[in-house]
Image 1 (cartoon, rainbow, N blue to C red):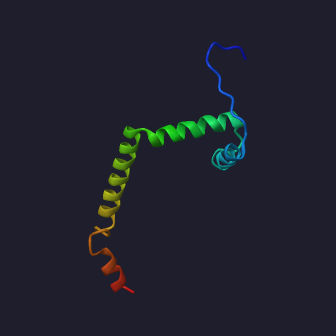
Image 2 (cartoon, helix red, strand yellow; image 1 turned 180 degrees about the vertical axis):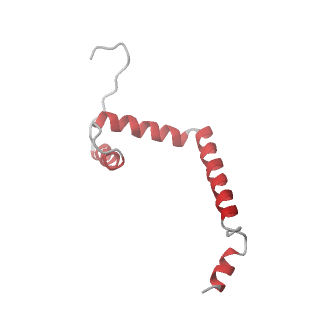
Image 3 (cartoon, rainbow, N blue to C red; image 1 turned 90 degrees about the vertical axis):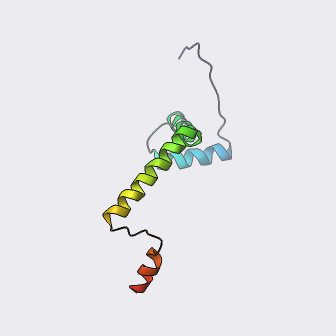
Length: 86
C-alpha cells in the first residue's frame, strides 16, 4: 500500500521467530505484523516510567484491598500465624 510514512523491515531471524512464537501464544490468530505491533506496544508500556508507576500503584492498591478483605492476612506476623495453624 502506498504511503509517505517510513517503513521498517524485520527479518525473521531465530530470535525474532521466538518472539513471534511467544506472541502467537499470547495473541493467537493475528498476523506476524499485528503481533510485532502488539509486542512493541507491550514493550513500550513496560519501559515507560509513568506506566511502570501506574502498575506499581495498582498492585499496591490491590494488595491493600486484599489485606482489608481478608482481615489483614499479610501483616508482619502472617507467616508465623499461618504456620501455627498447621
